[in-house]
Image (cartoon, rainbow over all chains, first blue to last red; front, side, top):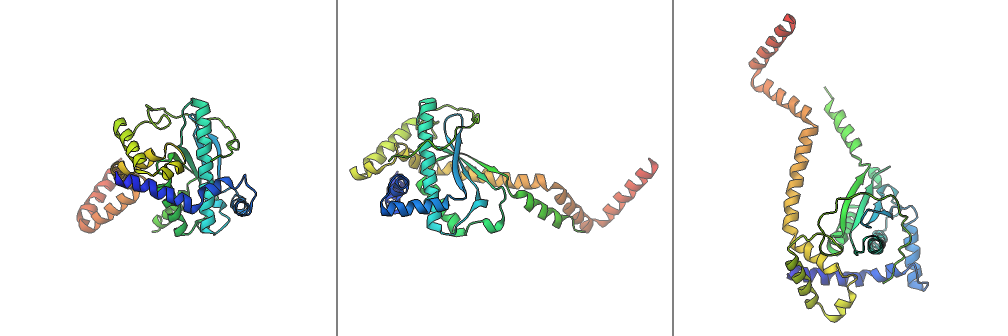
Length: 167
Length: 127
């Protein structure tokens, strides 16, 4: 039980330190700090590497992640962009599911699309670990279903096949 | 906290099987409903007034409670996932495995392999 309490407290503290409320509000405010955050998010959002479009039957938002469209190397800004999209997807899910079924849901569907993905597009290991940490520790049980679209296994399998077919 | 919810375009929906739904936005309980309700009550009681006001949405305590309490089942499912990976590897690369097994057999029992090949060639010639 204590672990669950610590987990909630840790997340609340993280939300304050990371500035989740400021990230959420930056699109609607025009003062200095919010303006800076807005510009950062706009730059991160320029290629559409993460976005939410559409819902499932119960009103859960579909959040798309397209690693091939990675355009920056700044880890902190990447995480800010991820958090902004997560908060947006959750808010959309709450609104849509309440309107569609009368029940407020907070889980989202994750669609990871590897179309056009190359190994050089892959983020650094520290960024991947930070992403996992945010999803596991601060947004637990938030994923309903995850779908991997256009998985890059074809290239790996063909590479393995060429090794296998050697005499 | 307000958020613009008008951006996502509504597209044709995906059909899901809707399993029994009880708690947290109509989702099925992962644990016994009474255990979950007690857990949420305990978490809320342990927080200060200020922390309670910072909770972004009502489902947050139940999400953390489930994440901690259901870790055992998650570990179990991870074991199944590893089993599934091994099984799928065997399924996809069975021809490679058979080749390796044949080579090992040729190495350990060359006489048996020669006899088998002879028998097969005789059988094919008689056909």
